[in-house]
Length: 92
Image 1: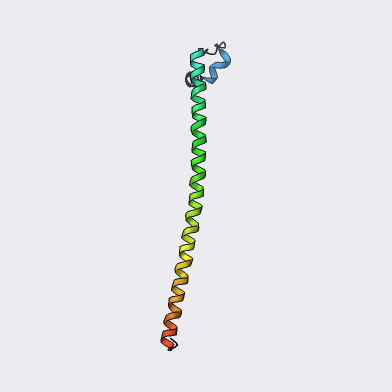
Image 2: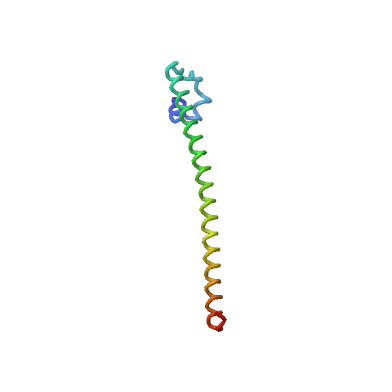
């Protein structure tokens, strides 16, 4: 994080003409805190991937259900039409 802040104030043109400034050192507590934050971010990213997988799987199942419902509705309509035709023809 410190590197990002220093990069904002650093001018790339001035780098060639000025002496190299030493990189800021992190304390052990800061390093430990960054390690824990990275682990937590990795954990959150993993949870997001799991939830995305579940979401995609649920969407696929929903699409199959919708397709099946459309198919059954079409079959119902065809059967109803056949029944009406048979009734009109006097075959009942």
